[in-house]
Each structure stands twice: as C-alpha cells, then as structure tokens.
Image 1: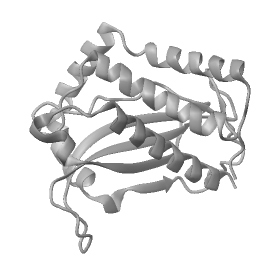
Image 2: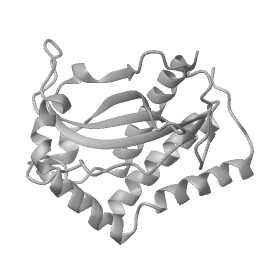
Image 3: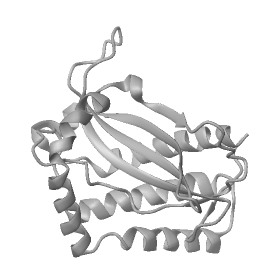
Length: 219
C-alpha cells in the first residue's frame, strides 16, 4: 500500500528544490566539460557494448554486509548523460542538446521526488548525513539483441538507467541498480528524437522499480 502525502506547500517546496538541483548542472561550462569527457572516454566505450546489450546483467547488486535500514533520505545529484551518445559510436537516438539535457535531468529528479518522497517514506537531502544515501544516476542508450526464446525483434532500442548508491558520509559504494526501458522503434525511425511522453513514462517506471527495490533492501 502506498502512503500518500498531502499538502500543496510541501510539494511545491520539494519541486523547487529538485529544480534547483537540476539547474546547477546545466551551465554552458558544464556542457562543454561533458562533451570533452565523452570524447575522452570514447576509447573505453567499446568494452561496455556487451554489458549494455545483455539484459541478463541488469538487476540489483549489493555490497555484502551493508545495513540499509538506517537510510531514510536521498541526496540526488543531476543525472549523468556523459555516455548517452559517446563519440565514435553509431547509436540510433540523437545526441542531446542543452534543452534536451535540461529536460531529461528535470524529469529524472521530478519522477524520483514524486515516487520516493511524495508517495514513499523518504526525505530529500541537500547535505551528506548518516541516514542519507547519495543516488548517482546515469542514462545510456543501446541496441539490444533479443533474449533467447523471447520473440523480441532484433535491434530493439533501449534506454538503460544505472543508479549507483553511495553512503553519503564515507563515499563508499553500497549498491548498483540497472534497468532498461525499450523504445518503440516506429517512433524513432531515421534517428529522430525521443518524445517527451516516452521520457516521462520511462522515468516513472524506473522510479517505481527503484522504490520497490530500495524498500526491500531496508526491510
């Protein structure tokens, strides 16, 4: 059962906070830095292709011995889009301009706040603390080979969201979660951009999944 939290002022305050967190990463300087970092990582990207294309490697990976019961707040840096379209790789979906990046990051943060804070048991934190998990999200795209016996068409376009969870005080990685959302190829022919509805739906599905997995870890 989901616990709904009512109260207009509280929701507006959290939304303003989430937009502030997204906006901090959308300056021209950061866009230039992201392009430079993407180009620098191009040589390493080919080694990731098999991982991205293999759905069997999706899931939740937890560091043994970590007690999640004390974590009740989330610190959420801006979504990492460095590997959305790495230099030197032919990928089906267009590169993201500055407005696209802003929209992706805003949608990511709003979906997390709506699902885990407003409808869940978590608080949003700006600073590290003993009860705070830092959630570092990264979004990629890939062309996935079908699983054996699945009947899925070859060349299915997918978006992959990886959420790395860190203890905000020690900086230690405590868990990694990866999930993919298929994209209807008919809506993305000839290298067309994603629609806003596709992006919003994908992030809402991801955040529902993230909440369920995190709730399970805290029990």
